[in-house]
Image (tube, rainbow, N blue to C red; front, side, top):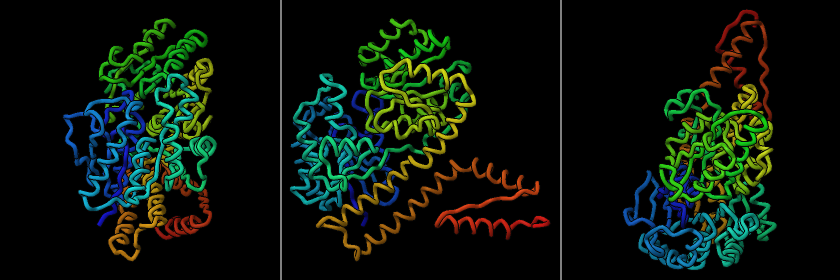
Length: 495
């Protein structure tokens, strides 16, 4: 029998359209994590609030993944700031659902503080251990947004309870961990840093000219991309101000593409933030150089990333920030705010640049550098691709998460019995499935690198040169193995 895990994401459904006010990185993270966990052998149920009567209550979404729509409050859209009163109904629904299913979950993974409240209640009632990823911390949000933070103060007490009662807390980056310890007195021993990631089968470099042809973009323009939710804290106005400064002070022309909003066509009535940004662009005299694209599906994003010369993300704060990682995965340099997760995913001077938030002049200076130097652009592209492939695939994220799950379940009173052959075989099968997924990912991402490396080795040997193979620890044996294979398979006079 496969181990069953419940993911709770009360406002961010994996079925949600990305780019809306309440649909962004958390939706992507929950969706990708669920699919990757299913790929390595778990059965995943995602519980999210039912907000659309057109959707069935249970959706068999992917192989091994169900989406369970929970009736908690009216079956219509409700801003996430107003959902907390419905969490008791959410908890009661889950308790009844678990009883009907007759196969309790080994563990619950809550996403956001309100989901954490549900998980804490279920732990009390049913003894199911839980972990939590907050995605955004209320005290950090209040510090940066002030009166524009519409969550009530009641949320702070909920967060503190969840921090105290969770079996494990997932921090998305070192800054997230530090905030949990400093602001919530979280036990550092209960915190595991696991970042978000990108899907290597969906996001990869596409030829720039081809990407622009697909999107109908000018092949000669310098293009700056901003992509994400249309809310003030994302700092899109800073990007528009930097575009104006780039034009006035540096005499450099560029087009700014802004992807996101509540509708496929950019409508300031539906998405008021678009209207505010349009007015700002007009005030600065750059309205003709700013294109609002509207909301786009996930399948189109690699073309926008690949078509752009540079991706910019300038939020006031950001617990992680998936879009900079996705941009680097498509070979696009990133300029980002030196905040939260971005200051860890973007390596300053290596994969892009970091600048202070709300500083359009500093951003304009860095835009000038990237747009004005092909050599620098290519340097960032190559480094960025290597960086995200090594650190930020969802396969790596899911494997790290599964390791944490096993540790939590083994430490809980109702731990897995390792004498149960089903659990033992499931663990073994999960390992093989992870290797299979790694092989599939490697086939697409390493082919060019393997050909390049083979060419370099061949040229060196044919010209009388040598190949130095190095290793440290286990990789020393790999180096010896590789040397033996070269010597055994290839005959060159004098060797």
